[in-house]
Amino acid sequence: MIKYCLTVTCPSTRGIVAVIANYLADQGCNITDSSQFDDPETGKFFMRVSFVSETGVERAALEAGFADTATAFNMDFAFHDEDTKMKVVIMVSRFGHCLNDLLYRVRIGALPIDIVAVISNHMDYQKVVVNHDIPFHCIKVTKENKPQAEAAIMQVVEDSGAELIVLARYMQILSDEMCRKMSGRIINIHHSFLPSFKGANPYKQAYERGVKLIGATSHYVTADLDEGPIIEQDTVRVTHAQSASDYVSLGRDVESQVLARAIHAHAHRRVFLNGNKTVVFPASPGSYSSERMG
Image 1 (cartoon, rainbow, N blue to C red):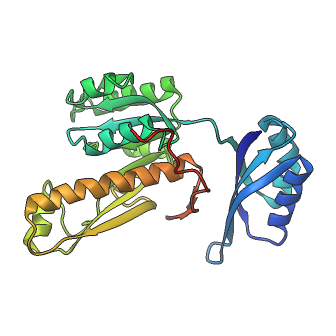
Image 2: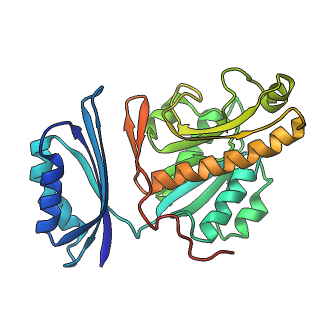
Image 3: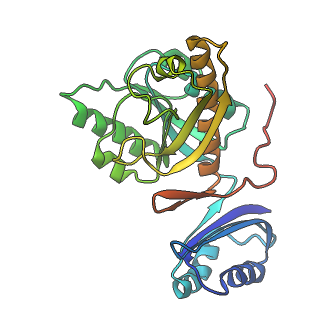
């Protein structure tokens, strides 16, 4: 049986769930998981439905048959094959904890993505990336060559067919133009001390102020630096007895976990943009299972 998911965003009105369920049943499909949210503030309705085709109907036929319903309800919709892995480009600088974590999760099948390239402005992780049989591109970025460097980055994205860019501690600011072009398709990770502790060493600043919670935030990238719609966050507690280097180590761990969860949600089509916020539906049963444990 073919596994699909349907994502829908539309103005809130009566009968949406019923018309979707009836359409899928008429097409010989069985719903296995469903999530929905009606936002009274924006008047928008969001829905994600996982289902299996018990009669072998193909995605193109599902899309064509659903067009009239979508028009009637003013829906933005998409059908996705759940067995097709999302193509992703990872960008990294000199902090490799998130990159290495993602490489491992992909290797054991815990993340449903296909890393089609890794881009860096340094050579530090060339060997580890190539050893995973992934193309590595070193694209240096300076004030003088930034437009040319971004053009080279976008060429890699387009040539690889990537649907998502992940900034796995990539320490360069992207241009407004690139952010707009890839709106909703670039995910970033950073500590959650902003706006209190800015600069090169926020963990040291947090230690000196006696912070008791270390956190990380993963969000979509917009032209407003570190202020895009949030996908995932988490925290870890620290005490007075821990050192500044403890803060850094704990921060690395929570950053890696939060970024992986954000990518997991995006790759499973569970994240919906809702103005400056996101709607993030729970994971479907079985979506966290790995192919192997090591």
